[in-house]
Image (cartoon, rainbow, N blue to C red; front, side, top):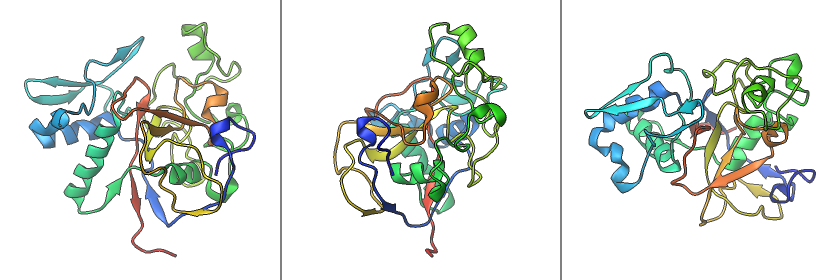
Length: 258
């Protein structure tokens, strides 16, 4: 886990052992998150903690879930797009609700689980689709030449066009080694961990620091230039933060361990 060739917070590269776990094939969608909001009703205020910013908007992207008269509706045509403008608290509450609804223990992935899954396990890929440039296989939704035409000051992958300037519907691109879509790009994803320096040593099921200020977010997004969509690249924000290219996916510990 980590990289000696990356930024300082990606160091040291270290060995991690994980229990078997499941990770959702795609990011949580607007339709799925709206169903959660409808089900919890008045609890959608998060008990004083914002779960999602319904008024969130930037350039051509905005929150596609609207709150009207106590109801929550997804803007037509955006049901299968990843939810954005969701806080870490919102992601956590969704996992808790889904657990109650299904009787299974859903949660956010740890940073170590996320990196293992994105990198194809022991393959340790540079990107979610592999080690090569995305040009040959439409690797994912990242800052590309179509985005560069709209945002002229961006650093983009000039010889790659994924067909989207902003977010894409989930599962629009080929899955990686473990059948997971959009581990690189589309929207970045909240993880369970507090953000902090990597420790030195060999660890089993690391869950990050015991306390902190920021939570980890991973994966880059449609807004991210090439360097920022590497599997080992780290990012972080306070739990109440939300933006136009940040979402999440759910995880679950496997009952049967090898």
